[in-house]
Image (cartoon, rainbow, N blue to C red):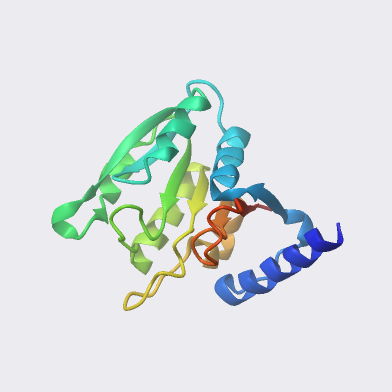
Amino acid sequence: PKIENELKDLITTQMQKLYEFSPRREEIQLTVGGIGALFAGLMTVLQKNDEVIYFDPSYPLHLAQIYLTEARPSFVPLVEERGWAPDLEKLRESITKRTKAIILTNPNNPTGTIWKKNEVEALAQIIIDRGLILILDEAYDFLTYENHLFSPMKIEELRSNIILCKSFSKEFAMTGWRIGYSWSN
């Protein structure tokens, strides 16, 4: 537990720097890579025939994870002509009574798109209004240069609807180590 607590303390320090709040140790779960965090999050909130909003294109392994939960993806396009921006109107239209979660990879894999602050705020309002869960994959948050990343984690009233999933693989060049974590409160 000593090494685990030390790692969780370092994660807390990083989260304070990135998201401007300090989580408690017990809110952080160490996982087998970021993929383990994502799958655990999906398995926690989804049941058979639930729907999950999947922004298309996005990381294709998310689809496999959705299917393993026996839920169904609801595809919402990212609009190439607008720099792979989200179609928020299509998002609103795609939410049904079966929709339980939205997966957001920000920055997006494979497009590299970084959602603008106003897009994140609009998404947050939709999630809060509809009582949805945001499965937030920010494995590439450190790979932003000209464009600033505004994380949904910075929206305090949204945090109770977020499962944050992170990986050490890319940021710390630890791809073979398979260490990641999730946070939720």
